Length: 117
Image 1 (cartoon, rainbow, N blue to C red):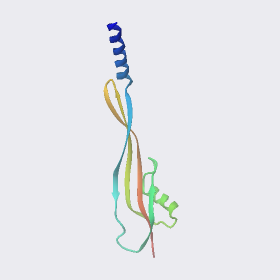
Image 2: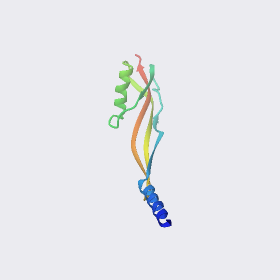
Image 3: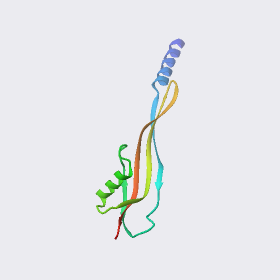
Image 4: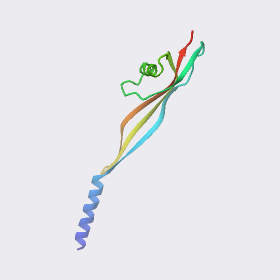
């Protein structure tokens, strides 16, 4: 009877060790910032624009094009903040912990302005 209990406990232990488990963790952190307004000239502030681009369209020109869809008279986007949201997967298995980056999403935010003559 003792051998059978030890055998069952050993099988259960191996099943737990080799099955492992996975958890996800999301971290949002600042990536970069360009927080300045034009020094000279007159301009009109149109409003804040938030943009969550795909990995292939994370540039200023794409951000400006998106801002023009929100505010048609946009000439420039200033005070730009870029944050990144990273999703990690932690897996435990027979060989210890493994942490892998699943995806990273960039979020851009800025103020759309229109230059006045």
